[in-house]
Length: 284
Ligand code: NDP
Ligand code: OXD
Image (cartoon, rainbow, N blue to C red; front, side, top):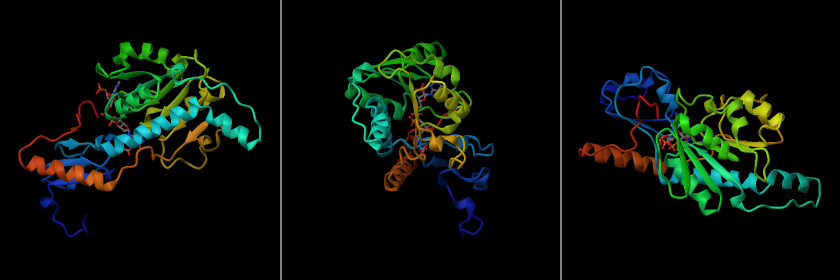
């Protein structure tokens, strides 16, 4: 920025992804900050973030890709892919009975833009779907639970736990041993499965590993990690029951995001309202 040739005072809109803490404070006349992703946890951690409206991304391109990721990984565990790939490597013809989708309940933590879309797609495939959010939600075909009182009943129904929560002070390390131990084991899967595509800070990684090792969890699909890129010495890399992706569950077409930001600026300049504003008190 010091070398960019722009006068920071002339900049009214910032479109950013993980700027350095303090970087945005250098623009005294910002009107709106656009976060170039759905999760705003990195911006929320910047104590000097200018006090102007903050908008997050909610576009079909991103939502659809996350739905693909969730469907792919739920099916991977439901269709016993880890077992079948291992059988193939060993040239072993040993089919196991394949249950119908409705034998499993998928529990989705976070029923926002991404959680709702994934839940509806899983319903269409025949899974039973339950969901959990901060405030009460109503989604066709999804049994919705909310708040602290709804957490245990939600977990007790869930065979495959999908986490699509934002990272906030309330949700940090929510995915821990106590939660894994409350999941439902009464399904053809036996041990429950964890799928986390929210943020790495939502998970206690030592608890995931010990839960996988003692059978509290049967398997995990992880897209996000406490430290990214994932350190070379992380046990997740080679764990036989971890399906690892490098935080790319929902890469988004840059043109789609640019259009979204441009449309919001045009509407805002014409006196219209901004969409998908972040509530700074809630942190998402
Ligand atoms: P939304 O803001 O639309 O939805 C968030 C959901 O989480 C809401 O249902 C909200 O409840 C719920 N929630 C928030 N805090 C709590 C809490 N304390 N207890 C219970 N429920 C809570 O977000 P999106 O669906 O757009 O995105 C979710 C997250 O996905 C992002 O914040 C980001 O971290 C992650 N993400 C990851 C990507 C990847 O590539 N891995 C890509 C994009 C996003 P309520 O409905 O009551 O508000
Ligand atoms: C996002 C992400 O939050 O890609 O959009 O993680």
